[in-house]
Image 1: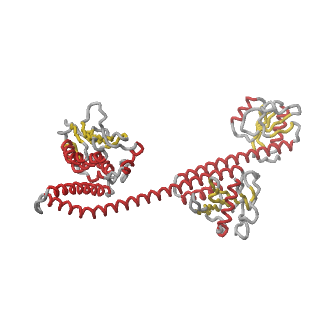
Image 2: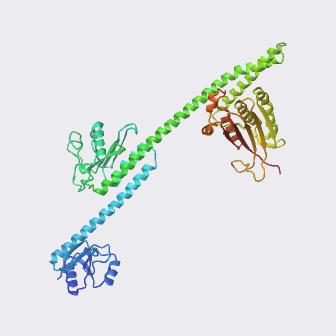
Image 3: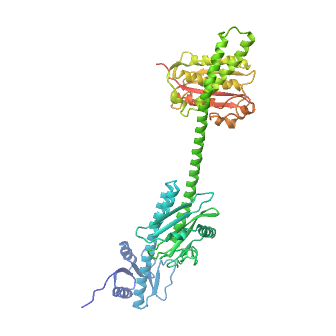
Length: 552
């Protein structure tokens, strides 16, 4: 009775010579192969298209076919192997039956190992990509470190992964570790003394090296890693005795190391080849970049928070001081009014003149205190606006009339051209008076004797670009002066609280730097916009646009 053969591999024998084809097929069948045969290219291509064979044994005429199946060439003594023969191995046609079967079996094993390595590399790359994406999804340094050690443990099936980051001017100290559930762990005392670790990580980073220690240290890739010297970490002194090859990788950026990473596959003897080492170094580089970015962002947030605290402290101080100033100032203004209206008896012309000067300066001081009090309110100006229909032309007339004496005192002419005398817009009259008073007062302060100020208001016309940001029609008010102007590089700062132009500081022009900041808040609270254009030495124009609903 014939014994059954355990068939584990499938082969194709492709040979033009029928005798040799039959002999080769017989040898492989005896060795336990399932064999199909082909005598020419067409039948061979059909068999290969099935995709179920482990090896192709072919003569020189058929071995040049393109296929992913490993090819064992059956060569005659007269045959020459050329670049057209895509073969993995070859033997002579006269080889012993045992050699043929052995070569076929070995070739299949090598191909299976190669495919397994390729599949593992693809799996590792996908795992590393996932770890990198997770690290980039957060700015929390500890979370980045925890993601790295956990992800590497899962990718390389390690029992224990440790990361130590040393504090320097670029980053703060950081520790992270991942221990596989029910896995063996490394003693903690091995990492207590950080000085040797720092020196080791700096040396590895400078030499662009990683270290391997414990277990089977033969990687076969000494250009990528050197062996861990005895006595550095895996010793009785350090309490570190891994059961598998342990990898130490420096974490660095620039000219020095940031820290060191350890991967310890304690439960099994892993293999650190070129692919594995390259992927670890790649993800560690990404981790270093993410940690530095997170540290930078954290410092920026701390600075921003500190600036906000300082700003709030300044505003709180202003609020307190303003309230303290308001009480005596109110009393001063009240007594001045009593003196000027004769309640305390008749006064000479000279005394009246002095009281007028005191009164004007008291009014200026009151306006300044009001501006500072408005700036000390942390809520936007628009939150305090009560909207009601108001006559814009009358509001502008009141402002120009009230400020004309101040302009004349300084030798400046002020004029007003109005197209909006009978036009009503929605707004807060008190706030709008304050808005235009601030703008015109600024123009008076910065216009020298002999200069002029012109206030205009215009209705939107067909084809004009008189529209506010939301696209609706707007009435436009312009205050144009022939004053000293603003340096062009300082124009972007004019709406910043407490900012004063350099020529105002140099010319000792009084002011707090709050006027335009308050104006911007009022305009935005009304749904409009405000802009400033200026030419140094020639003058400044402030343009305000406010929402306008034309009548039906």
